Amino acid sequence: MKVLLVWLLFFSNLTKVAHNDPNKELDSIRVNYTKAVSDKKLCKTMLAQLQAKNGNSVYLAYRGAFKTIWASHAINPIVKLNAFNKGKKDIENAVKESPDNVEIRFIRLSIQQNCPSFLGYNNEIAQDLQFIHANKNSITSIPLKNMIATVLKKEIR
Image (tube, rainbow, N blue to C red; front, top):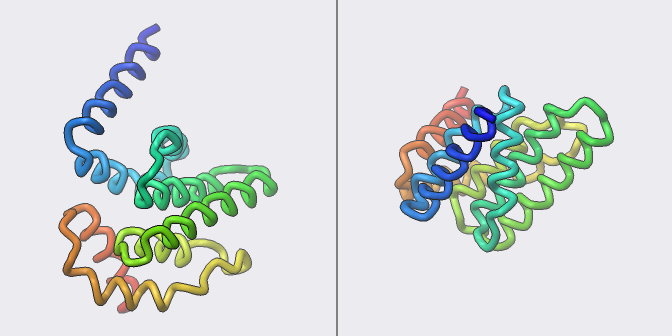
């Protein structure tokens, strides 16, 4: 019963954040994006939260990214591949919807840089890096700036 109460409070607070300030909600997603790689429960929670988000290409890109991350948590190879392919499809659809969105291009870059090469999802790394370098000054979110700075530092090395 206590667990149910905690979950209800957690999700009611997420709803309040979503209605009060969409930027805070996005910043929360951004922060959890990097944590989800090592936290299976968080990844699952974020997938559930993002499943309800429609009509926004940034949310679609994050949903796809969390699906590809979920693939790394799965044990069954078929489940892994299916999750990855669904995530990749969401990311590519988000890029098609908003090709000039720096955050979406960053999401695709971060997934392509970190997925196994045998999956063949690495064709746009150079293009996305160039786009992000050219447009990084337009970013206003501190968590997003920090994530991008981390990825760009890796590229310089």
